[in-house]
Length: 276
Image (cartoon, rainbow, N blue to C red; front, side):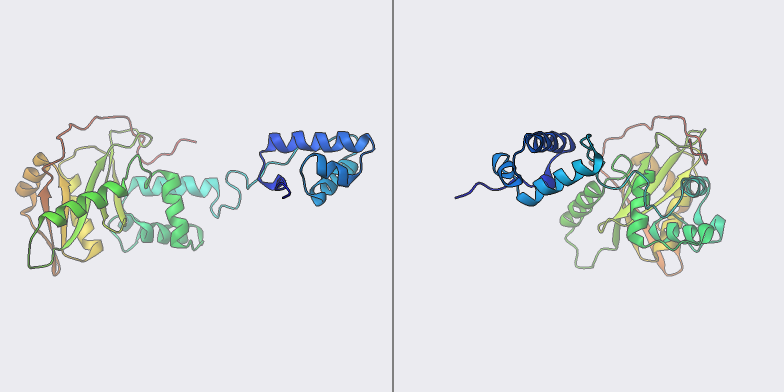
């Protein structure tokens, strides 16, 4: 049985360049194309193509071109537009720009992009920008952890009544944003849907109530938020009289017993300004 021929399309650039040199060297000694293909275990058409490239380039074996698209190529937003939009997202809530949302999410981001640039992005593309800009990165958000915690909570509850929609709360201090000590508060449901808000001061007493009010206003469902720390729950109880109410919907919080209580570390955050 004949050995399988080498598929040059699957080779690395360096290996492909070496094979091209071998093909050209044998060609220059007078070897026929069929014999070259047999010696190097290549397809006849592959040898023909390499020799043709050599003949077109003269006495230089062409270096293989870089494969794939260049970084930033075919993006719908320019670098200037991306910087503008990120600055807006990190400076204020969607409602500050006349959008019908209290928190940022895929829908709010898509509406902001269309408002500012006239470009209508598919939601899948918005997800890619969320990841690229760091809002949905694993460093700040962990969908697997959210789903695990939500599933664990559901499995512990033996209730005849269905539970409200569950969300996992995350409070993170981003490493690259702002000139003040800021934070991102976010909530993720079991389907991985993310909503967040960038806030200029970490640990401010109004941050969490503001976020939770916005979450309830946007989702418009009965919500139960997991992952609240003991001091946060005590502060919320004093400030807001849980459960929160918006129209016909309510939001309540539960203390995450398994989460270690870790004090937030304050780091610099150039709030609302994006480094070049």
